[in-house]
Image (cartoon, rainbow, N blue to C red; front, side, top):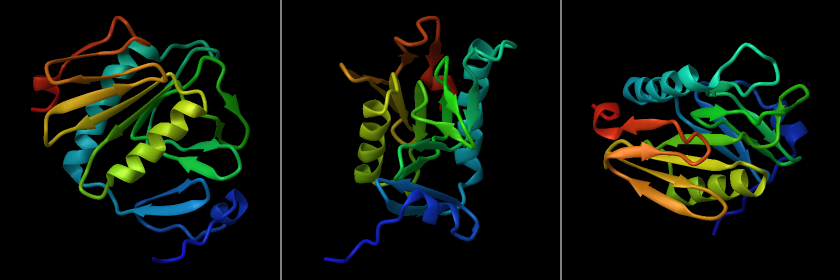
Length: 172
C-alpha cells in the first residue's frame, strides 16, 4: 500500500498551476485531467438551467457558479462542476464553506471513492443537496443529509421545488 502525503491548504495554494483541476480532500491532493468537450457541454446545460431560476441582482441572493472552488475548513478545496451558493455564503479570498447545492457530473476520471468522499464532505459542511449526474447511465441522484433519491425521467430537488428537469432532453 502506498503512502499519501497530506497537504495543508497553504501548501496547496503554492502548487504550480497545471492543466486540469486540482482538489484537496482532507489534505489529500487529487489531480483531474482537463474535461472533455462533451462533459463541459453537459455541465453548461445544468448551469444555464440553474442560472435562469436562481441568479438574481441582489448581493444577498444565491448565485450559480460553474467550476468554482470552495475552501472548506483548513484541509479541503473542492470544485463542483456547478454550484449554488448559500444565501449568506461566507467569502474571504475564496468562497468559504460548502455551497447550498453541489453538482458533480461523472466522467471517466472520477472514482466512486472520490465522489463518495466529496458528497460526505459537502453534506457534513452544510450543503443542503449534492446532485450527481451519470451521463452514461442517463440518470441522476440527489443526496441530502436525510435521504437520497435516484431519477431517470424527471429530475427534482427539495431545495429548488420549482425545478423540473426532463433528463431525457438533458442527456441528448
